[in-house]
Image (cartoon, rainbow, N blue to C red; front, side):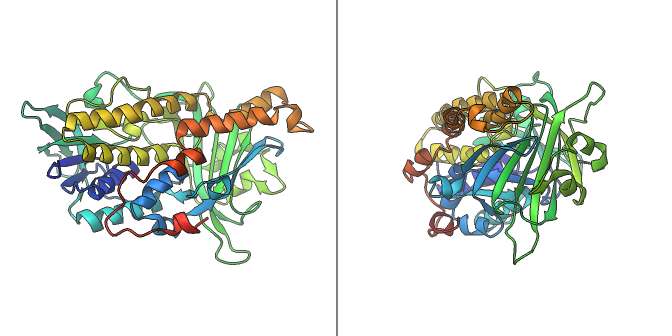
Amino acid sequence: MSRAKIVIAGAGIGGLTAALSLHAVGLTDVTLLEAATTIEPIGVGLNILPNAVRELDELGLGDRLLGVAMATGSLSYYNRFGQLIWNEPRGKAAGHRWPQLSIHRGRLQAVLLDAVLERLGPGAVVAGSRVTGFENRPDGTVEIEVAHQVSGAVSHVTADVLIGADGIHSGVRAAMYPGEGPPRWNRLIVWRGSTWAGPFLDGRTMVIAGDARRRAVVYPLTRPEGPSERVLMNWAVARRAGDDEFPDRADWNRPVDPERFLAGFDDLRFGWLDVPALIRSGQEALEYPMVDRDPLPAWTSGRATLLGDAAHAMHPMGSNGATQSIVDGRVLAAALAGHDDIGAALAAYENERRPRTTALQEASRRMGPEVVIDIADQRAPDGFDSIDAVIPPDELARISAGYAQLAGSDPEMVNARPPGRPAAPAARPSAAAADGD
């Protein structure tokens, strides 16, 4: 299978990781078709959990990532009064051999893109080319329809495998399921952005605070370069939409004035973090609806398969979107390398990944581990003197551990996995596994 021609629709986090993973197993005839005419470092912050950091480290990218990310030390949940509900260590502090990384999406994409161009060549990524359909041919290949964004022309490309890593509005998925319709909205609106600000708490903590109706997520993306220096802080706030609020579900990066939404979060001011002030001091706020896709009965059709958000778009509860896309790419490449028959390889990939991500999609609809905020609000809407009297410690621990096992990010699961997926050629042990946290 080393001569197989592989086309990836989409040059986002999942598509780029898949390309690097394919190269690592000796599959080098790989082309990424990206709909955007230019690949720019857009977006805001995201988290990469240790199971995905391990995968990227084994691709030889650990040192590069540590240079542009923050190794998160803990995650804390607070109620709307700033009272601590639950705190848990993250990354190496939790016993992982790899850190959890908080990183700007654009920086992560840039690291992956640079590596793809270095290893697969400058022609590996073709911008302005959106995959709009495909057809499995009798000879065992797949014919791919490509719309060229600048010229408006349509062309056809033939490959041995088509990987649909083209996001929540995937053209490959739409070709498989033409009657599916738009993403599913849960009636929550999210506003996101980043702000240069002073660190809070220990400088390495991710905070989620609020109640059952609205909440805020704040975490640092960079380290301070010196005493009293500011860091790039990622923030997101979400609340349920009113009956007259219908955000544009097609525009994922629509800038809005923060004063449009801040009144709903004005009381989230704590001695160590002032959420409204943080948002007001930022340069931009982006609005989008919280949407996902229903789980699919199958990801694969002939020689075409899905990956990342195209396969399992989920609500951002538990920091699993980018993480699961990265793991998808590594598992798919390993399956293609481990089977002589492409059909058997795609089946093995789907059999391993689809049940887990389906369960994660469903758990995310139930608020994932953030459900502890809802529980605290329901049981103690006016606050509490002791969280132990509201939610017993063992109940909190079960919620956290259960989600980690579901996501594949439990320390024992991550550390115990044999190094069965090959590292990039000439890759050396990285600081990510040594002392990066």
